[in-house]
Image (cartoon, rainbow, N blue to C red; front, top):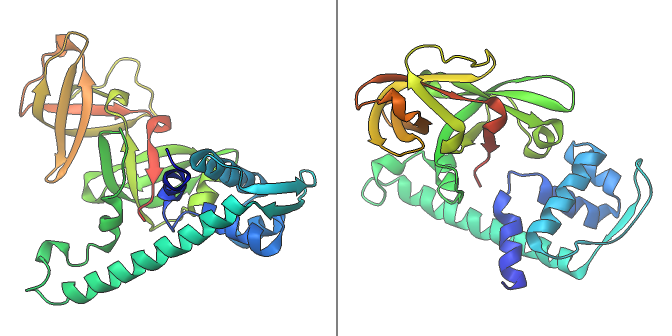
Length: 265
């Protein structure tokens, strides 16, 4: 894999993520602590951002860092500057594409009606992940002021679910009420059963009701697709003994620590 390809991996978070802002701030000020303050995140979150970008890019982004927990000087490596240059070029290209689309969408003959006003959703189409469940949501509420926070995500009139994330992730993603996001979770993390309380299910676990639309039988568990509402589906697994069938009403549970919050580009 070439370095350029690894840079693309590092930029996969999109412009709404603060990681690139933090790297840019370090290049501008020569200070991790100042970059953290400018981005509105903690010093710890800033280091987490740099570590994540470095892992994804496959190169060292900081030449040196002097100082303890309270701050320190830092210089970007040539690779760090290359990553910023590529980020700027990609942002310019993204804005040009969006501007051309907006101009075309204003004319019905040039753009499908279904795409008009679909700005945020277009960025989500580029999201690549193994997680089967990807549901458009909106941040409703943030709870907790410790190292972890509960983020309540509204699914329109289909209910809501909660995600348990670190405080650093809240800061780096800039999560706030009203923000459109994507709620992600693996199908294997979703338990499906008949529409009755499941034994041993904790009260804090997310609970969503729906109707079975597809069933794929398996020896270790049946893969169940259920419709929460028209146009919104969830995939999970049920015990073979439940013998769930299409059109049957069911309940799905997913622990809030298994729900991931993602932003579009």
